[in-house]
Amino acid sequence: MANPILQILSGETLSTPPIWFMRQAGRHLPEYLKVRETAKDFIDFCFSPDKAAEVTLQPIDRYDMDAAILFADILLIPIGLGRDVRFEKGVGPVLDPITPMEISKLTLQGAADRISPVYETVSKVRARLDQSKALIGFCGGPWTVATYMIEGKGSPTKETAKRFAYENPEAMADLLEALVKSSADYLIEQSKAGADVLKIFESWAEGLSPDLFDRLVLNPTRDIIDRIRAAGINKPIIGFPRGAGLNAIRYAHDTGITAIAAGTQMPLSDFRATLPDQMPVQGNLDPLALRIGGKVLRRAVDEVLREAQGGPHIFNLGHGVTPDVKIENVKAVVAHIRGGEPNYV
Image 1 (tube, rainbow, N blue to C red):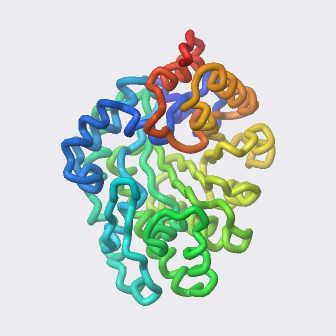
Image 2 (cartoon, rainbow, N blue to C red; image 1 turned 30 degrees about the vertical axis):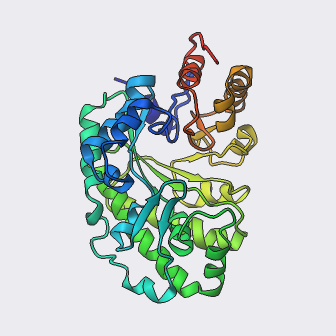
Image 3 (cartoon, rainbow, N blue to C red; image 1 turned 120 degrees about the vertical axis):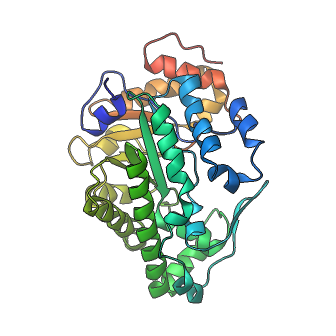
């Protein structure tokens, strides 16, 4: 049976683009919340293969998405490296900010093995998922994960992490190297467990000078992909340098990615003209339009479909599904793309 996600990632252009959404398994689904209540905390949830597999599959059952994305978190890698990660209600992830002296103490050897419950989740999902559906494994981009490790939490500007990179270049290089090695091992193990596609979420690629972008994003991403390919894994890899602007052009050409995901602000038709020939593009419906619904959402879906013409395209959001999204609107987008009768609310 044909797998449309893999068809697109092999360079085919389909008249009906396949669809999945970032954060499609999450708090907008009542069935997700029901399972979430059974875990003692978020980290426990991610490391419980039966629970994580169940919520990974929920968007397939409800929406018939073309891909399932592993339910996990980009900040599991720091746990493997020996750092404490906590998720606090109303705050999000909280870490003890790492200092330059502490980087050499990271437990790099076996880091990916210490988060091995994730691989059991992957194998459980792949066993239950129809072959026409792709299973996407992922990791956080090294710079994005490093920002949390340096700043201790999310921040709007990432100024502390950028200062760290400028003022401690050797320590920053060592931290990125640890993240590259552990993230590559992590993706390799996800692939071996059954992931069909791998994705690198560089969520904080915005606002970097070209020099910083190359040092913090482009080169580490290329190193991850080189390690994956050296391990004999040839599965497609999607890169998502969110908010990278024109830096995304070099990222597309120089990292070795198979496909690139575009953030909301990227005009797809102009972007496609700058990419390697027939590179698949994923994106990039505005998540706010999905929240608003109605005529706004219908028009936004039409605009993405129009902009994406001319090459391989996976329909997705420019960021992730938020908790307040209406289930009816996700269903309407899927119906719209597949030529049905969308019922936008």
